[in-house]
Image (tube, rainbow, N blue to C red; front, side, top):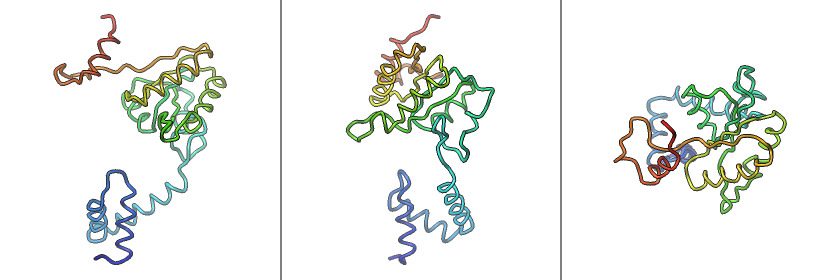
Length: 197
Protein backbone atom coordinates (compact mmCIF):
# COMPACT_ATOMS: atom_id res chain seq x y z
CA UNK A 1 0.00 0.00 0.00
CA UNK A 2 1.44 3.34 -1.09
CA UNK A 3 1.02 6.71 0.56
CA UNK A 4 -1.79 8.94 -0.80
CA UNK A 5 0.58 11.14 -2.83
CA UNK A 6 2.46 8.19 -4.37
CA UNK A 7 -0.88 6.59 -5.25
CA UNK A 8 -1.99 9.87 -6.80
CA UNK A 9 1.22 10.04 -8.87
CA UNK A 10 0.69 6.47 -10.12
CA UNK A 11 -2.92 7.27 -11.04
CA UNK A 12 -1.86 10.50 -12.82
CA UNK A 13 0.67 8.62 -14.97
CA UNK A 14 -2.13 6.35 -16.21
CA UNK A 15 -3.50 9.24 -18.28
CA UNK A 16 -0.79 8.45 -20.85
CA UNK A 17 -1.72 6.10 -23.71
CA UNK A 18 -0.80 2.42 -23.24
CA UNK A 19 0.18 2.97 -19.59
CA UNK A 20 -1.57 0.51 -17.31
CA UNK A 21 -1.37 0.21 -13.53
CA UNK A 22 1.91 -1.74 -13.46
CA UNK A 23 3.68 0.54 -15.96
CA UNK A 24 2.51 3.63 -14.07
CA UNK A 25 3.74 2.12 -10.81
CA UNK A 26 7.17 1.34 -12.34
CA UNK A 27 7.49 4.91 -13.69
CA UNK A 28 6.47 6.53 -10.42
CA UNK A 29 8.82 4.38 -8.34
CA UNK A 30 11.70 4.93 -10.78
CA UNK A 31 11.30 8.71 -10.58
CA UNK A 32 11.02 8.67 -6.77
CA UNK A 33 13.85 6.18 -6.17
CA UNK A 34 16.37 6.97 -8.88
CA UNK A 35 15.66 10.18 -10.78
CA UNK A 36 13.99 12.92 -8.76
CA UNK A 37 15.81 15.60 -10.78
CA UNK A 38 14.44 14.11 -14.00
CA UNK A 39 10.96 14.01 -12.47
CA UNK A 40 11.17 17.68 -11.51
CA UNK A 41 12.41 18.58 -15.00
CA UNK A 42 9.58 16.55 -16.56
CA UNK A 43 7.01 18.25 -14.31
CA UNK A 44 8.30 21.72 -15.22
CA UNK A 45 8.36 21.12 -18.97
CA UNK A 46 4.97 19.42 -18.88
CA UNK A 47 3.43 22.36 -17.00
CA UNK A 48 4.95 24.93 -19.42
CA UNK A 49 3.80 22.93 -22.45
CA UNK A 50 0.24 22.63 -21.13
CA UNK A 51 0.13 26.40 -20.51
CA UNK A 52 1.93 27.69 -23.62
CA UNK A 53 1.41 25.27 -26.51
CA UNK A 54 -1.57 26.12 -28.70
CA UNK A 55 -2.74 25.46 -32.24
CA UNK A 56 -1.30 27.28 -35.26
CA UNK A 57 -3.98 29.65 -36.54
CA UNK A 58 -3.48 28.45 -40.13
CA UNK A 59 -2.70 24.73 -40.06
CA UNK A 60 -3.79 23.73 -36.50
CA UNK A 61 -0.54 21.95 -35.56
CA UNK A 62 1.04 22.57 -32.15
CA UNK A 63 3.11 25.72 -31.61
CA UNK A 64 3.86 28.38 -29.02
CA UNK A 65 3.38 31.15 -31.62
CA UNK A 66 0.36 32.28 -33.65
CA UNK A 67 1.90 30.63 -36.72
CA UNK A 68 4.04 27.48 -36.67
CA UNK A 69 7.49 27.46 -38.28
CA UNK A 70 6.18 25.85 -41.46
CA UNK A 71 3.31 28.31 -42.01
CA UNK A 72 5.60 31.26 -41.22
CA UNK A 73 8.26 30.11 -43.70
CA UNK A 74 7.95 32.21 -46.91
CA UNK A 75 9.92 29.59 -48.87
CA UNK A 76 7.11 27.00 -48.57
CA UNK A 77 4.94 26.37 -51.66
CA UNK A 78 1.69 28.04 -50.65
CA UNK A 79 -0.38 26.59 -53.50
CA UNK A 80 0.10 23.05 -52.11
CA UNK A 81 -1.92 22.01 -49.06
CA UNK A 82 -1.55 18.56 -47.49
CA UNK A 83 -4.35 17.43 -45.16
CA UNK A 84 -3.23 15.10 -42.34
CA UNK A 85 -4.92 13.58 -39.31
CA UNK A 86 -2.37 14.58 -36.65
CA UNK A 87 0.75 16.68 -36.01
CA UNK A 88 2.73 13.40 -35.93
CA UNK A 89 1.83 12.94 -39.61
CA UNK A 90 3.47 16.29 -40.41
CA UNK A 91 6.66 15.11 -38.72
CA UNK A 92 6.67 11.89 -40.75
CA UNK A 93 6.21 13.76 -44.05
CA UNK A 94 8.79 16.41 -43.14
CA UNK A 95 11.35 13.71 -42.33
CA UNK A 96 10.97 12.40 -45.87
CA UNK A 97 12.25 15.74 -47.18
CA UNK A 98 10.08 15.38 -50.29
CA UNK A 99 7.33 17.93 -49.62
CA UNK A 100 7.67 21.71 -49.48
CA UNK A 101 4.03 22.81 -49.27
CA UNK A 102 1.81 23.68 -46.33
CA UNK A 103 -0.37 21.48 -44.09
CA UNK A 104 -3.75 21.37 -42.43
CA UNK A 105 -4.23 19.16 -39.35
CA UNK A 106 -7.69 17.64 -38.89
CA UNK A 107 -6.84 16.31 -35.41
CA UNK A 108 -8.70 13.08 -36.13
CA UNK A 109 -11.02 11.61 -38.73
CA UNK A 110 -14.75 11.51 -39.34
CA UNK A 111 -16.44 9.21 -36.85
CA UNK A 112 -20.18 9.89 -36.49
CA UNK A 113 -20.56 7.20 -33.81
CA UNK A 114 -18.05 9.08 -31.65
CA UNK A 115 -19.65 12.44 -32.40
CA UNK A 116 -16.79 13.59 -34.64
CA UNK A 117 -18.14 15.38 -37.68
CA UNK A 118 -16.86 18.07 -40.06
CA UNK A 119 -17.12 20.85 -37.43
CA UNK A 120 -14.95 18.95 -34.92
CA UNK A 121 -12.27 18.41 -37.57
CA UNK A 122 -12.18 22.07 -38.59
CA UNK A 123 -13.32 21.33 -42.13
CA UNK A 124 -15.10 24.72 -42.44
CA UNK A 125 -11.76 26.34 -41.50
CA UNK A 126 -10.03 24.17 -44.12
CA UNK A 127 -12.47 25.25 -46.84
CA UNK A 128 -11.98 28.90 -45.85
CA UNK A 129 -8.19 28.40 -46.00
CA UNK A 130 -8.46 26.93 -49.53
CA UNK A 131 -10.39 29.97 -50.74
CA UNK A 132 -8.31 32.53 -48.85
CA UNK A 133 -4.87 31.25 -49.89
CA UNK A 134 -5.59 30.29 -53.51
CA UNK A 135 -4.64 26.64 -53.03
CA UNK A 136 -4.11 24.87 -56.36
CA UNK A 137 -3.65 21.29 -55.12
CA UNK A 138 -5.15 19.62 -52.07
CA UNK A 139 -3.24 16.47 -51.07
CA UNK A 140 -5.30 14.10 -48.92
CA UNK A 141 -2.90 12.26 -46.61
CA UNK A 142 -5.36 10.69 -44.20
CA UNK A 143 -4.61 7.20 -42.92
CA UNK A 144 -5.43 4.10 -44.97
CA UNK A 145 -8.18 3.05 -42.56
CA UNK A 146 -11.92 2.90 -43.12
CA UNK A 147 -12.29 6.20 -41.23
CA UNK A 148 -9.35 7.79 -43.06
CA UNK A 149 -10.79 6.76 -46.42
CA UNK A 150 -14.24 8.10 -45.46
CA UNK A 151 -12.65 11.40 -44.41
CA UNK A 152 -10.72 11.65 -47.68
CA UNK A 153 -13.91 10.90 -49.65
CA UNK A 154 -15.82 13.57 -47.72
CA UNK A 155 -13.08 16.14 -48.39
CA UNK A 156 -13.00 15.24 -52.09
CA UNK A 157 -16.76 15.84 -52.29
CA UNK A 158 -16.62 19.05 -50.22
CA UNK A 159 -13.96 20.60 -52.46
CA UNK A 160 -15.09 19.43 -55.90
CA UNK A 161 -16.63 22.81 -56.86
CA UNK A 162 -13.50 24.80 -55.86
CA UNK A 163 -11.76 24.12 -59.17
CA UNK A 164 -8.61 22.76 -57.53
CA UNK A 165 -6.71 19.56 -58.09
CA UNK A 166 -7.43 17.00 -55.35
CA UNK A 167 -4.98 14.11 -54.98
CA UNK A 168 -4.60 11.21 -52.55
CA UNK A 169 -1.27 9.89 -51.31
CA UNK A 170 -0.44 6.47 -52.72
CA UNK A 171 -0.67 3.42 -50.48
CA UNK A 172 0.94 0.15 -51.36
CA UNK A 173 3.95 -2.11 -51.05
CA UNK A 174 6.67 -0.53 -48.88
CA UNK A 175 10.10 0.06 -50.38
CA UNK A 176 12.22 -2.99 -49.65
CA UNK A 177 9.14 -5.02 -48.77
CA UNK A 178 8.54 -8.56 -49.99
CA UNK A 179 5.22 -9.29 -51.67
CA UNK A 180 4.60 -12.44 -49.65
CA UNK A 181 4.68 -10.35 -46.43
CA UNK A 182 2.18 -7.72 -47.63
CA UNK A 183 -1.47 -8.09 -46.59
CA UNK A 184 -4.07 -8.68 -49.32
CA UNK A 185 -5.79 -5.28 -48.96
CA UNK A 186 -2.52 -3.38 -49.37
CA UNK A 187 -1.55 -5.54 -52.34
CA UNK A 188 -4.96 -5.03 -53.98
CA UNK A 189 -4.62 -1.25 -53.57
CA UNK A 190 -1.08 -1.30 -54.96
CA UNK A 191 -2.26 -3.21 -58.03
CA UNK A 192 -5.27 -0.97 -58.63
CA UNK A 193 -3.17 2.21 -58.31
CA UNK A 194 -0.17 1.02 -60.29
CA UNK A 195 1.92 3.56 -62.21
CA UNK A 196 3.42 3.51 -65.70
CA UNK A 197 7.04 2.40 -65.66
